Image 1 (tube, helix red, strand yellow):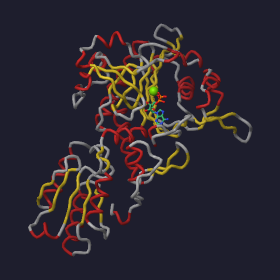
Image 2 (cartoon, helix red, strand yellow; image 1 turned 180 degrees about the vertical axis):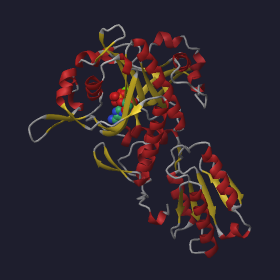
Image 3 (tube, protein in one colour; image 1 turned 90 degrees about the vertical axis):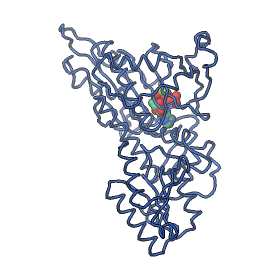
Image 4 (tube, protein in one colour; image 1 turned 90 degrees about the horizontal axis):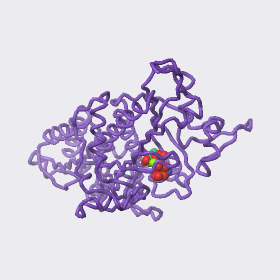
Length: 446
Ligand code: ATP
Ligand code: MG
């Protein structure tokens, strides 16, 4: 993309409504615009990152064997009356009447809809196990939407639902989700720690929230610092292997890590004092096994191998896709702007032409732009007639991980400058070498 032809409404001033850095930087970098409280338009740059995160979530879900589909945002109230949640959900649910006076709602989640689909089409244990998911907009009429996309009213969420014959099978689905989430967050350049969470009115031990540590997080968390040393990395995993998935769960959840809702002072005191940490975190996902709560209420049953009809065991598993943009920026920025991890950056590299209009500099930039594109990469070429300082400031604000700077002086010696946004380090090299290096960096990522 050439910046002169893009739509990038960068703000010079700090917007006064933004209380935290991710919200401020998303507004300043022209990624989002508030449409009304807690509801945002995704401008081109923000939309690009949202799509990248969505794609990674899709890839990792499908790698785990989960099946994508799409359910609507508007739902009929009748299904929610069956589960009993229409009245329970309270004011967070946006209720709507259609022209015939029928009660509708904008879905805050999809357990009812998916259970209805399941019961309409599945009747035998032979069709299990089954995990369906979608990535769709949700609406929750949050009392205090704030922090930009972190606590919106309309937000984008991946929600997946497993259907299994037995509790044991459903717990394997739970573990599989945990593994797939660990992989997902690492690909997004994030460390998200699974922490034991509150099962709510249903209770039970089978729910974990994934938290990204950040001062601006809304949750208070308590953990053994040894959990922060764990990484999933690129190890191979067989998602069908009950033992392998259970071993990962064991590895990542046996150290103390809890949110304030389940925090237990006595247990925490058993963690060596030097490793006890109290901090704040951003919830970027949650997994949940809830047994037969919905299947019993809504009659989602299958015939088992013994011919008996039993309600299926279910769980639901969510990732806050739009919230993740905020979480990534909270975890990765400096005072000049965003620093995108390579896995989600809106453009792979920026090209800065120090002297637009100079024949040689223009030609060198065009050649770089064409070679990067020919390799399947997506560069952003700042071809505006602006001062170098302004161009650098924009690139730093946007946070592309790599910048190639092209100027007449370097070109005399046959070199351009390649700069890492994260370390600030620059290296001079021939243009072809810069292209080669960038291609290598992304070859390991895509
Ligand atoms: P919270 O405690 O933050 O209100 P939740 O536990 O009610 O979230 P879940 O039902 O677990 O949310 O939804 C799955 C994921 O969706 C959450 O882990 C979070 O990342 C994201 N999410 C939930 N509410 C919002 C919101 N208002 N804005 C943006 N993302 C959200
Ligand atoms: Mg949650």
